[in-house]
Length: 463
Image 1 (cartoon, rainbow, N blue to C red):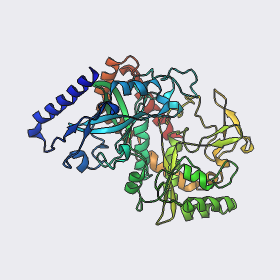
Image 2 (tube, one colour):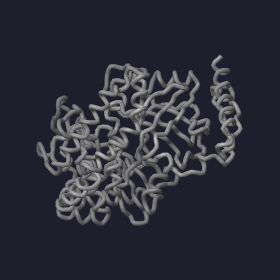
Image 3 (cartoon, helix red, strand yellow):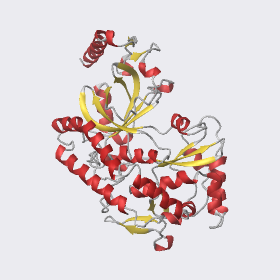
Image 4 (cartoon, rainbow, N blue to C red):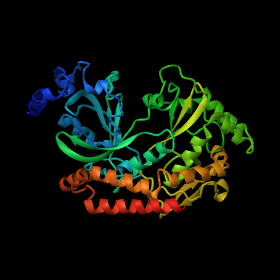
């Protein structure tokens, strides 16, 4: 019965698409059902004329559009990933966008600890487990599934962030927009509506994947190594090992990669005296870029990012960042990631897990781990890291960047304009989700959260 319903669904999509043929030049690709082993996910061979093959990613991340994406999975496959979202296991399905279907694609839930809080049946929030109990969970769609080189508007992956912990539904989009406006390499983000097996799941944040395609688009030489969450120095000030870098490598993995650039950078920082560190920084980094990064990061209180050193036992480390090494210039760049907790600690430490105790450049407990916040989680001052300490010496440039941010993209006039524009763009989608799902943010709660965000921005501009 399920197979028949799925086949009928695809035939109906095909017929509807043909009926609209006079309004588009895109041809319908042939659809061939796979065997029962593949759960009847259709194999669609593109003709080459599809819009998704011939249009750049700018269309997907158009700030003036609210796109709708449709996912179709066999019921058994959806039930499988719903039973254990934290396993982050891919299943096959299809993606339909503006009348064109790509199939098969890989589909899975995604997220760190915070993304699963209160959304899985397991009782330990710090170790997510159990079945899905929220309507929305963050999802990743792998277009280049099973080793194919297929792309979708130039993209290999799509990432839909649930925004479950953000009633304003704005933190991701606004944070990345501010980084980019300050000329910091950062992902693009827009809102998007997501349908799953014909049902409206809700409003998500669609955030650009940081990968080789991202580096080629954002750097003069984008062929270099990209590392996820590998800080150049360990907590005790030693350069990371080659094995650690290779474990965090996200590009060039299969090309006998060398980590010489970032490893040499780390070694020079480790060897330098405190007075010499700025010279090393200026050799390897675009200083205005990294100070702009710091200006945005600290202004929006991105307390779950690169400058929060969480401590577990004797080990301390930060997360939610990437490093890119540009091979031609032999330079390194810090890239922000995962901003769903940004802004919330501007007025008070609203999040019991993320608050950073120190002001920028300050040191507590003589660089020993210390407890902070309502939960008493242990952290270490960011300025105890030799590289971060070096960045704190650029006080004049940081003051200039903070003023540029406050008077420019984060000015009250610009923020009122952007937030009003984006709020109107997502209002109907927010109302629809609230009407259909009891766990969706209510319109009243959303509007209150938007007002709080505006107040937080006002406070941030004064600091």
